[in-house]
Image 1 (cartoon, rainbow, N blue to C red):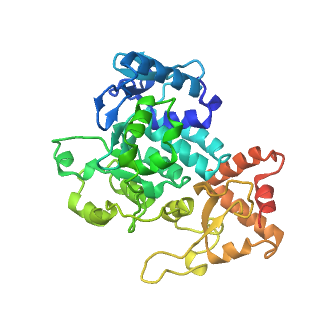
Image 2 (cartoon, helix red, strand yellow):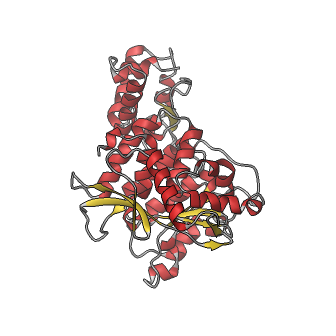
Image 3 (cartoon, one colour):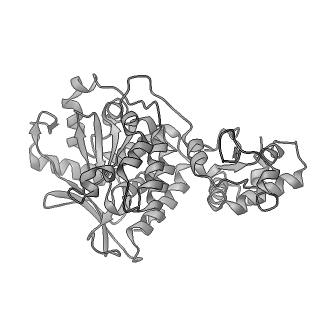
Length: 402
């Protein structure tokens, strides 16, 4: 199977669900995604009494194989699980394979709306496996240790989250900040969670074929679910929370629990508050947190202090966020992290249409593309999607200044 031939849904499925067949092998023979077959018959975990175990498994297998196209690979029943396996033909680590998957995702997400991408993200991240927690109001899935140990994976996950409108509905349960984890008493996986009520209101009708068991859970608990609320965090968004996780916890040993809990302000961030759903510009927020502290257009030519100033009560320089492909180009997906760069005020204003000389504007654009490989890749993907490959990257961006 060539991942370049897969659709966005299939790629997102791999990104969230794939693991090593044998976790002890850094370079496994196969990658696998598997889900435990559930047939419980209790209040919050019900499969319809009209369907027995055999019918349920058959129904789910048929639904998965009809709704996903993994070419020659198919979902099968294996003991107590439903799984799909992929040969590791290029002898890659899981981290490297998932990075290639992410690279293909980037080429395809520019063609879908934020709402559609949010739907794909929520379903592929939380429906194939995981648990239904009516008490805590979460649909949860464990993050494999191979993922939570990788700064690259978490960083790219943050970028994908920034493309959705889900940030206020997502939650990360940091197991590493629990005393029993640090003391090696209980090593439970980090939990990735989405608000159950929000999922019920927006997506559950779309999962009937691929997970009829989970669908039935929603159906059987509708009365209770309508009384639940969406999430709303007042003090810190999920983007900030998971960025903190990546920078301060992933790959670290000797974690100072109390210090990190204080920095993260657990008591406030974990609080669930009633209120209207909040939407924010997550791609912009990601760029503010993660883009290099420099002017992408002139940092190699001028000293920073000659082009900008330090923020009040801070040791950070003032930079402005700039859309490389202008936000005014409504037919192009511009709200992605790769389309944002930090510029000093002088360069930012120089890129206002018809303000500076054309040669100078093109020089600034060339510097931006040279200094930001992911931005250059984004521009090239956009060019392909608009069938304008004959133009140079610089000329293309220049024409899109608005």
